[in-house]
Image (spheres, rainbow, N blue to C red):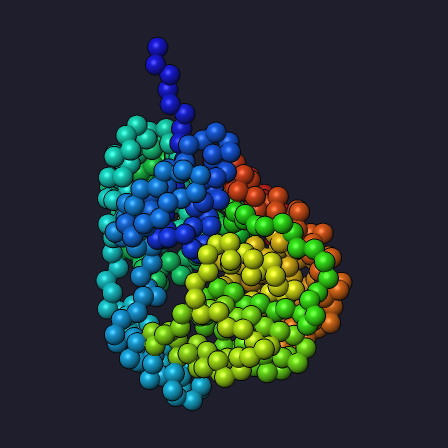
Length: 426
């Protein structure tokens, strides 16, 4: 008698284009957790993916459809933003919003080819009727066609992690219908096979309120090197890592370096910055280049996963001067990784990062001027902060362990449990 094959985990990630960034970190973490549990992972990546996943994981380049296109540039954007970056800051700040609004107004909301490509990939894998399909990073455009293109019997369960706010998803790469309607269509098509998640409790609450459906919290998976130990460097090492974007507060960094360059050394990792970037970001980048020297190192290239984590772990203090309004209930992968390594971070008030800041509430800033003040305070408190954050790292690692996330994804959320969990987290 033939034995049924155990269910697999199929991670469909149209944003996975290589072994860099948070798409790779999330996909690899959950796939590795599946392997450890005896579940075979299969990764469906962007058609641009040309690498090999570690540990012999099967990875199939499958999607011409992109995860997001709203932030992609063009010749008009490069010309306008490049000229705007030469204007006074008060005028430069006015350049980006109208161009973004124009782009949104001329883009027709639609479903892209993701759903059909996913259906074709599952058909090619054969016998996927018991498998869990995970979509951990998808846009409204990606989701819009699933109900019509993907037969419910093609999978055992469909887990969708909603990592951005409803307003964000209805504004950038919007589908032909609002997200509330798209989620209702998915529920009507897949029934109890549909499992909805968000990676913070406040975000889960927003989606549950919007959709009227169960939305459970599924915290970001974090795989990090050993917890940082020892006292601060001399001088203290302050790090900004990740993309140079306006919403990440990149424009605040030149003023911080000028104000505190005498008491710390800085490493600012931004990746390449060009004419298509926000004019204020370009201006800040030129000011930072003028300040670069023995106390300021600029890293303008992409980092491998190992080099990126090594940079975070080398920090005595991480700088996260993010826009609290833009981030709101959204998670921060960099903060999650820093907490797992025992590295304190300065974060904005009024968003998820304030709740996740850790042992020292004094690391939260409420204004641009307050950012410099809180960083200055933290520099003086590092001998006390570092042991406290190292001690808190073990519990954080457990909460954000890939195995913890996988266990959550394998169990369908129930509305009563979700509402109770959200109440306790609030």
